[in-house]
Image 1 (tube, rainbow, N blue to C red):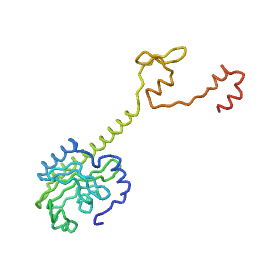
Image 2 (tube, rainbow, N blue to C red):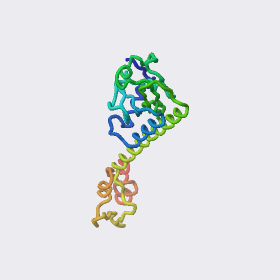
Image 3 (cartoon, one colour):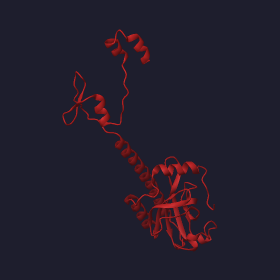
Length: 236
């Protein structure tokens, strides 16, 4: 392998899996971020990357047709090793990259600047990067803007995950009505169609709950006085 490996690699990869972003369809917020990054930094190429186990996959891409590259060719594999923006002003003069197929061949990378995407747990997921086919520099203002955008990308990723988890939780729970019409004598509940059902059937129908039955000590004492002592012991 010709790329560095973070010390927390296994946990970093687990974090990427939890976000459920790999191989998903394009999404407008991420496309907007790379559009802004490209315009601010005046580059023909901008990417949001995720560095997977053996590849670099692009969640959003501008100016580049391919959806991913091998990890050993990924500039971003180096970017995720730290928390600061990595700038390569001329890849032909950088011993890490001058023989890289993405430099010697298409898209003929010369300039690269990548701000790492570091989540709240400190895992480097990938980067927001801009690329040019000519050697150049990044101004201080452009770098600060790129870093600010990278933080917004991370916020979007984490909000996306939170929204998905919430939707999944809501999908698994059938919310009961706020006010339930219940018979004061037999305790059956009237449903929306006017039918009376047992509490057990109603709750089972409208939620994911299941029931196991028993008799509480108070009911044992009231309704089964003669049998209370042995039954009470069984309930313990």
